[in-house]
Each structure stands twice: as structure tokens, then as C-alpha cells.
Length: 215
Image (cartoon, rainbow, N blue to C red; front, side, top):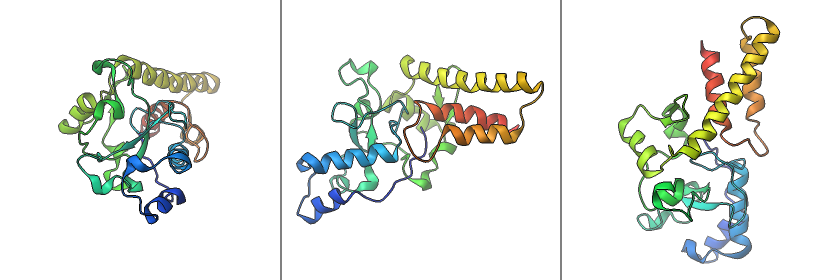
């Protein structure tokens, strides 16, 4: 999970509300497409929870309400409450479902798009690809509400860690010594540009590199 920087609210969503729209379920057609595109772009093509790839289409991603429509109807059209999520194995049994599909109407302690929640300071990763939190309640939410530690997601995170490790090993071998922090910092910056689509689970690789940077 990585911090999502919310951009300006799409004009289409504003126009829908100003035209009398009150319910998310009534948002359709080009207005919904533009909303979906806006979420996809600001998240750089990654799911808000698992960080796997999403596609800006009805079948390629879901529009997630961090606070559910059922429990918080007043927030169903508030852009700060909307995120782009993967399909989360919505065609499989519940034990394999994850992200928004698994979450349903449940509450989460922290929103990755809320800067005050500082999501990246609240999570870490095990080398087997497991996502964890030192906060017991949030750790439980990662496992039970979002189901982020199923094998297919852990596998993706392990590959991201291996990606970072292999880069570091090659640099170290070439230099015949410790990799300078300036080069690690440059790799971190190159791995997460501010525009364009990001590689799936790339923030896990960035997390590993940041650990090297801090030593």
C-alpha cells in the first residue's frame, strides 16, 4: 500500500452533483468513465490497496468507496472518499477475494489517500512478501478485511523485492564495494516517477531500497 496524492476533482463529478445528482448509483456514461480515468491516472495504474495493476475500464477496475455507501451515504460522491481498486478476484470464493471485493461495507482505520493517515509509515513487508503493520488492529484489517496476504499477492511482492535485490547485487558487483547512497536514491526516484503507469508492486521494491538507504 502506498500513499495516493489526490488531484483536482474531475469536472464531471462536480457537474453531476451541481445538476442534482445525489446518488453514486445514478452516475453513468461518460461522467463515470471520466471519474474512473481520473482515479486511474492519479494512482498511476495501481490498485489503491494491493498495488497490483488496474486497467481504466469497467471490467479492469472498480471505483471504491473508502467509507462505504451503505454506512456513509453523505460521502458517496465526495471525491476524497473515492479510490480505484482492482477486481479483487470477484469471480472466486471469498477466501480468495481481496481489496474492495473482500472489504465490502467494512471500515478501515486508514485511507491511503489521506496524507494525515501517513499510510506508508504504518506498514512494512516481510521478505516472504507479507504486508504487515505494527498496529495490531490495522494488521488485522490488512489480513481479514482486505485479505492482502493471499499467496498470489505475496508472490508479486516477493518478485518486487527480488527486483530490488538483483539491481543492488549487480551494482555492488560492478563497483566492487558498497553501492553509494546517491545511486540508491536515484534508483528509488526512477522507480516511482510522478507521471505515467507504475510497475505492479513497485513500492515494495522502493521499501527495500529505502531500507538500504537508511543503513
